[in-house]
Image (tube, rainbow, N blue to C red; front, side, top):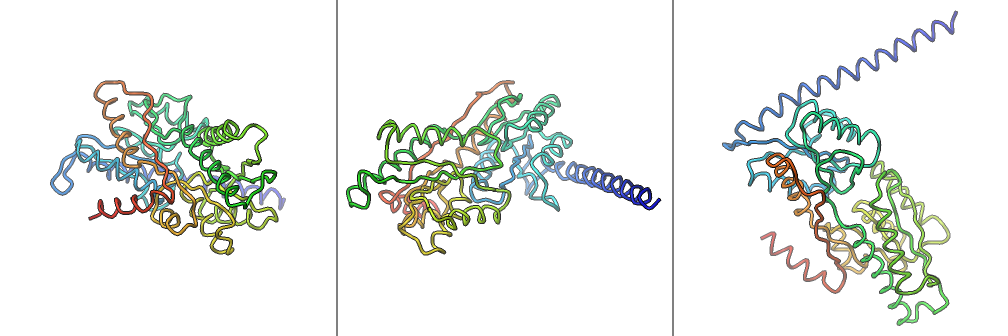
Length: 352
């Protein structure tokens, strides 16, 4: 009798919870539909013809904010309002939840940091069936009906990292910090939650470059280390676990901005600056300053403004012509000790 009562209570609680979630989602959609009515109304005296949204689970990062700024500025020139979906909502929602809101709100275009999951494929195809073109950003969904993919050349980035590994080996041998029979341990930190092939391409290109230059029996051991990037705290924990092990890598390659920053901070905290070489990703002020102080060896600079611009141009072209290029690739550049001063000077001049 007591078990039946508990079961009834559980079922009622479950139904109430599901109902509450559905009501909440409906309220959010209605709220957002009222919100987006402003896209074709005046915004400080300006009218917009189209309303695009950008969807990502990293919208607070300086990298994604820079990409968004590139998209927003391009949209302003084209009478298009680009919104970072989620910033104006009262709670944090997943990428898939935000995508559903965008579809229900009948926006004019969606820019999404995608993955290869079946749910993402279904959502993209649903949006396209509703007449909403979708551009995938940084991470693609190749099975979907997206109109274009805007990203960076993973193969070229991997070769840049491989070239840096070779340069470090040569420097250590010249300084007699590494003998010909010594093995250099390289750890490549990849996102454990990322269902994309982009990072795999980078790792493969890195390994290929080292083998081509040093031979398949080279004195390097390249290991892939999974990092939980669910949130900032989980990344920090994953990175600190690396330094808690007895065998700390000689070189750590970080494939995103947050991981690079966490590795840099951990090296400072553990007082092992100079003992571990960091190859980073992105050109945030923190990372660039770390290169200038010889804490980070080098980083990959991504033209974020170009990424944002390409996203808007792809959607605009598709809306006007019904077709656009399948791929857009933004420029990348290596920042290291040899050019960091020049880069910082240029950034200061641009800020003035």
